[in-house]
Image (cartoon, rainbow over all chains, first blue to last red; front, side, top):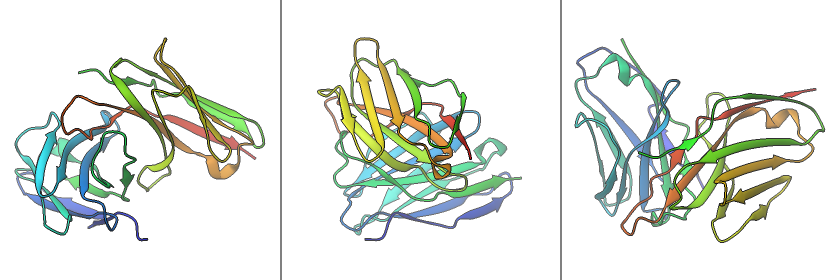
Length: 114
Length: 115
């Protein structure tokens, strides 16, 4: 069974631009979560989607948004990029999103904002 | 909010020795804990998990111990191999009564295995 896939793997943007990242969960998984990883803040939860609905959101500004499609694939969008948005963005999937389910991570998208 | 506290140490061990990586968590409501391994350029890889109704769980060469009294978690790796070199994260989750699948991660420990 294929793992979680994320595209693109690397991205360079300039301040003020916007970016869209994509995540395809493991087949059969309906919950998709997004995390931001930086050297300073570590791994931080962004949001979680299940059945095309955002169920939980972390402490990030409204510039960070996401959505989920009927096939469980998810996208996240960051508008008006800032230098501090440079990070590794990780997507994780699980079957139903129960809090005791294992989340499986993709390889991440490395975003550099110049 | 509360978070898993893991001051980022570097643990250096000799190949073949046992490794112990520690993690302190602060949220007494957390009832699910998980260890991930992250190699350079990759996403976190699941190692082992444990629920709060257990004190110990074993996998292949790995054991996780949970001490709820002092809110402490540890990962033991037996016969450490060079391929075990990576950053290890502990994470926690709680049942807040709603739909939540929000892992709180520690800061990570770098395990360096010397051949």
